[in-house]
Image (cartoon, rainbow, N blue to C red; front, side, top):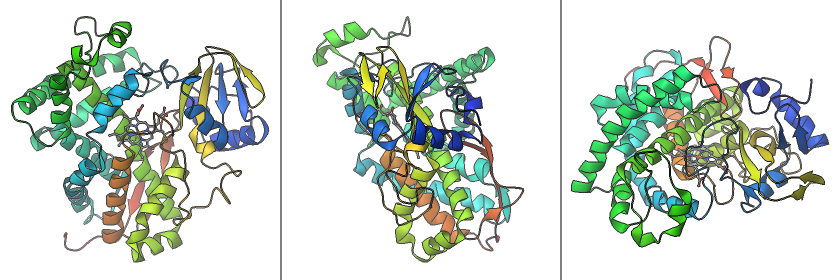
Length: 416
Ligand code: HEM
């Protein structure tokens, strides 16, 4: 195995990636990759240190090498904090709890469709629709428009990948326009008829004067201008809310989808752990944490060094890019005993949702989604197994992407 590869491209994250990262963690924990032109950080302690040190390792220059910035996740302070404070109101424990009922319905309807079949593709028929439909619900998409929403989100998400082509970008632009037109109507509706939902919260921010807006003419924010204004003078416009709703779509969809399919893969590979969960569903929340640790749906995010510094004995220069390898940190033997073991009661902290000021805004939502999905799946279809050779993985430096996972199970006789 060659140690170096292009860690910013899909090709570097093929089947050999775990071995490569394990070697680096052991031998060169802060590694300069010639092919990627960036530092690769593989130990838990170092990933945590960099993540918690925004002044020295900023997110403000982008966190996904080669991928355009989308906002929030790649914003620097003070704007990041203000924006986050606002969106966070849509993700409080109370809001997440409120979504649990509608989400359980989404899961139930999704399982109803596959339960009598005895066989399905777990990815396209279970893991893809459920987070997508929840975000649709949060954004206020009507049931009749769900298919359209699915197409827009697929097109927009394709352009957020590292292998985007001009055609993909063009399709994404067209989808964004249609989506923006739709969402603008929802925003206007919530302004006129407020509800206890995310869009009402974001729309309400305009009246509270909390945020600036994207420049509608140039499509760019004027950061210096924004920082100079006082909160009173700031406002949030429809196009900025639309952008925030795209961010949630990009950040919350593929991650959760792959958390769910990766989690099911672990359960199928460890029938004895699954049996314990079927017998005692109260263990599902700690099992979900262990799934996020071992699956590490987010593969990597980056930071940019703001001034010359040292890390693990290596000299890092201002402007250098540092890549945080989450799967490696999450299986660091310095941190975890028998790190590769799937132990549903391990209950250990992990970096699967990041750490520090950019800690995953949707972590509570994702945890709820995975818990409810596995509660329903294990109750109704407890004996899933691979058919057709198991999961088909597609290499990516962004998200551990499971493209297909055919499964079979005892069909449910009468649908609940
Ligand atoms: C299992 C599912 C998920 C995983 C593994 C995951 C992972 C992560 C990670 C590692 C970060 C840290 C980024 C950094 O430090 O640079 C992050 C940030 C973020 N996540 Fe998640 N995420 C998941 C689900 C979600 C969901 C469901 C949403 C929303 C609907 C969401 C929204 C966000 C946002 C907005 C940020 C940026 C926060 C900020 O920069 O302040 N995520 N996520």
